[in-house]
Image (tube, rainbow, N blue to C red):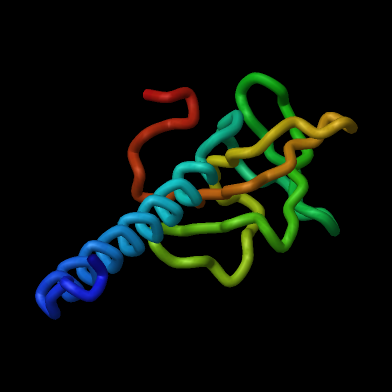
Length: 121
């Protein structure tokens, strides 16, 4: 049966294989992006920088310690800022750590012109 396959059939099979590989790569990329937003979100203002992250002041708990690592993605709009600064408003997505800190997987800096307040209004 393999000998009876035409060149056109091989091209169709190759095209199907390329499309399946593209869909697999696209799905993996989309899953990674979605995975960054899994976890508990925290909103607040950076009150102090520490050696392994920063302190986040929010409305519920006055101050939380946020731990960052090389795997933490930091974004301001579509770009990665050079450094976080005291006074910046941020959204932190992460998981609670054993010592009460937030292990951040994603930090999004809220632009100063954004009219929304930290209490969700």
